Image (cartoon, rainbow, N blue to C red; front, side, top):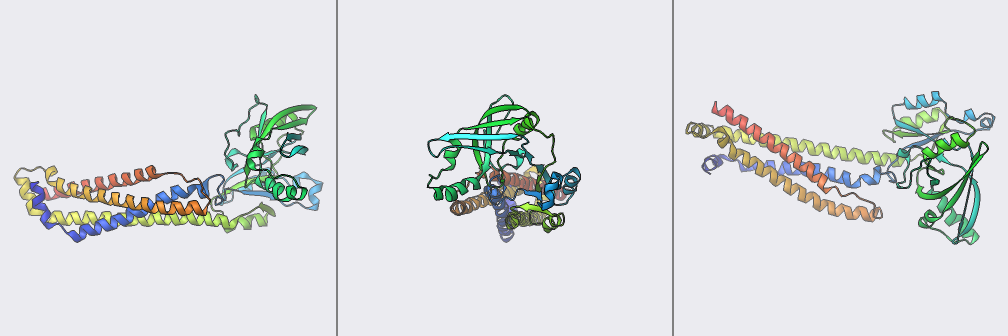
Amino acid sequence: MLTWKLLKKNLSVPQLVGYVFAGFVGLTIILFGIQFYADTRPLYSSNDSFLNPDFLVINKKVSVLSNLSSSMITFNEKDVDDIKKQPFVKKTGFFTSSKFGIRASASSSTFGGFYTEMFFESVPDEFIDVQSEDWTWSEEQNYIPIIIPRTYLTLYNFGFAQTQGLPQISENIVEKINLKVTVYGNGKTKIFDARIVGFSDKLNTILAPESFLKWANVEFGSESAPNPSRILVETYNPSDPLIAKYFGEKNYEIADYRGNTGKAAYFLRLVIISVLIIGLIITLLAISLMLLSISLLIYKNKEKLENLILLGYSRAVVAKPYQILGLSLTAFIFTLAFIVVLIIRNFYIKKISVLFDNPEIESNIIFTFSIGFAILLIVCAVNALWIRKKVNETAK
């Protein structure tokens, strides 16, 4: 190409190498940050993640005076509004307790049969750390899904079962046991089929669907719309010192408060955001270097450009070699950065799988590729427009 042969003589190799290196480092950091966040997100943001502090369970402290009135251990509207106003609170939810009698029974060849009085509570589905397709209920169905704390099963297997010479049971076995749940109150009785559909690591109660409990409290309950005795609080930053200070002053208890876990999750997010910002800054500096290099190259070739335009070459034809150069270098940077990210990912995926006992890690290669490709298109578009502008200025 004649125009390229005339214009390439003033190319500055060190400047182009600097652009390639800086662009490669910046884009690699950005793509790595995005990929690492996508791959490790289930470890601290999924419902059953050990790194996800998710929410706090708040209740009022029980004292001798609490027996005189239930209002002393429940939250009234003023208490709830005050909690919602706190700067560290993202959203709140409430425990709904059963206000009717419940009996459960079952028989199994594995551990015999049992009969017990029990209770149900419910929370909004967004606070439940168990994923199950069976976690639904409507008035038309005679089946109740139940979630129990995993600690209940642990206590049975390693406490009660061992001392009594009973067989230990796994979660899969428990989930296959068919229960009969008798609900009674207000002079009414109804028998439901029930089954345990999951085990919660964060909620220390026996859960039934919120829709069921609201219906059953109206149908069988003795109290309508009682004040909640426990509140779920999701925070923006679980390591915020205001949390412990506020609830301490209010004399509220925080059940199983995992401050260190919250700090770990918050710190991990902060590190990833910092890495992305650093990568973005380096990439912007690399783009600035590229634009500066092309501007200097066009300035050095100013006389040749003017002559080419006077000979009848269009401005688009004159600008094309520079645009192809920018596109080629940027595409090379993207390809190299993406390959390096894949290599690094294969390394840390193996480490994470060993460290966290093969967690469910989402495959987000396509998402990361799409982000990188979008950055590639943006950079190429900026280069093309900048080059066209400088060529037009030279032609004038």
